Amino acid sequence: MSRRECLEAVAAALSSGQTFLATTHVRPDGDALGSLTALMLGLETLGKTVHAYTEDAPAAMYHFLPAIGRIGVGPPPPDLGSAVDAAIALDCASLDRAGALRKHLVAAPRLISVDHHSDGVPFGDVRCTDGDASSTAELMMELLVDIMGVGLTMELATCLLAGHIFDTGRFSQSNATPTAFCNAARLVEAGADPEAIVRDMHDTMPLHRLRLKGRALERAEIDETSGLTWSLLSRDDFASLSARPEDAEGIVVDLRVVAGSSAAALISEVKPRECRVSMRSRGDDVDVARLAMHFGGGGHTRAAGCTIEAPPDEAIRLLLQAAREHLAAGPE
Image (cartoon, rainbow, N blue to C red; front, side, top):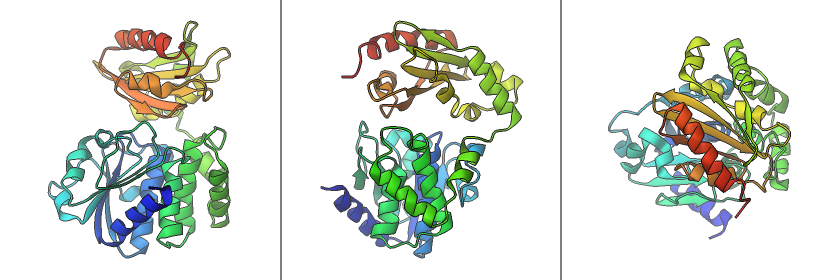
């Protein structure tokens, strides 16, 4: 089935329903939240009701998104999944990526999935997965605007452009395709302000987050064998700066610039035996998704993440050991 055909099937499923439960993956990023808010605005324009929830609260850098304040944080009411016409999961490579929302999704009469992770585990009664899409926001634009006929307002355009900007690394990565650039032109014409989006999403942060970044950069090390630049933020770091693990979003990008590095990883200790790892590579010839999958995570060639169930010292040892195996060997 072609991408257009699978999106038309999703459109038919959405058109046949009136009320929906919608979510995205845990620790939602710019593409996840841009796509989710776009879905909310788009379906509401068509007179439908969307109950949107995420397991984790959106980071402050995404508070500029229209409708972001209407996303519920944490589990929805126990009976909501079975009360809606369908549930929708966006930007989830697998059902488990929805976290605690998983059980509510599967309780719905119909489950719809829209995603662009090529390494994912397909799920859903109706789904569209296209690994060639720059972002899930790209798929949502085609679905809502081109197929379902939703008018491209400034608010909707802002949500969709934010998703494109985030997942293409501000249109600097190989997934910044001609389609992505053409979409961006349409979205800017509709009123989206790329300068404001980049400023809010990437170039503005509270002082405690700037200090958190400084601490991570000060500790940066490079593993010569694998070419991995890495750093650690401990629970003490977060506590002493009145910061949350979500405040570490994006810091790994700054670690990636080290000369001689092929990839970067930021390890954030969130519990005594739980470390979240965010990874970025410098190019398509180094696949950090392969490294993340070693620990049960996933993502894309140039951006991935995982959780290592170990204290920081052990997590670092395990990560470097795996990096020497998966990164030094080159792409498969």
